[in-house]
Length: 332
Ligand code: ATP
Ligand code: FE2
Image (cartoon, rainbow, N blue to C red; front, side):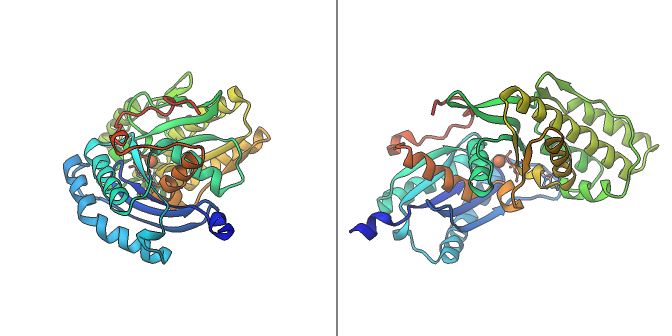
């Protein structure tokens, strides 16, 4: 019986806030047993919510099987089902929530809905030595500076319009690079060191990208600039903005750890700038493997474990999706 009690809790995490459908299987000893994901992509159009939801439905069974096979487990070994309850696109969230409820009911497993943004922060703490970091969460839809302060995960700065990844993708689409644009722009930017002046938009702790996008489009249309120079200048400008607000949040919260998360955190130039800023202020910057930067099921499984061990329990009727769930709504 003693042995039984010592067994780690194994959580099955479902991510479906946006274009990624992911399943992560993680145990309470922080072992990542599986982290399988598939992302919806298009050549031309953006994301149409109903189409993305169809993609998730189509791929779910295969991804679930693949994750269980990778972890060498069956559903009977799972002690907790955790899913992204929000924030995100309603159509997509609903797919993950329905799968989570079905599995929980069928196999009689406890279920917990978690906050996607907080999951980005907690997986970073689990996989690095960061104890109480400021998170620069830079993804497609989200750009937030998050830290835990006075019993809440609080947002210290954010984009006033679109997320930085969506901004990068919009520019990439405009210059016909396809989607997602981030990696392609990063490669082009590496071929230049010719900085062209762009608007720099920081308002207190917040940033905004709409004006920079318009300016970039005008510069591109004028035909007077090399694409490599525009990509380079774009990265230098918007990443400097992100690093500036991150630094201000670190000073404000008196925290000396910076963690990068979200798809844009895969960018090596952004990592380099974060490292430099942290070093200059005697702090430390932490980066994750790309599979944990982008949306993934492992972070959802892990936050589920944390919440479950803190005592959170949910009935099925409490697992309704929360598309507009704010990071700072709950007290911990
Ligand atoms: P969320 O729902 O959390 O907002 P998301 O659905 O946008 O996330 P992510 O996988 O976190 O998904 O991030 C995708 C974004 O990351 C895209 O906008 C993509 O262009 C960007 N990205 C990926 N790699 C890079 C890179 N190397 N440089 C810059 N941006 C990148
Ligand atoms: Fe995300």
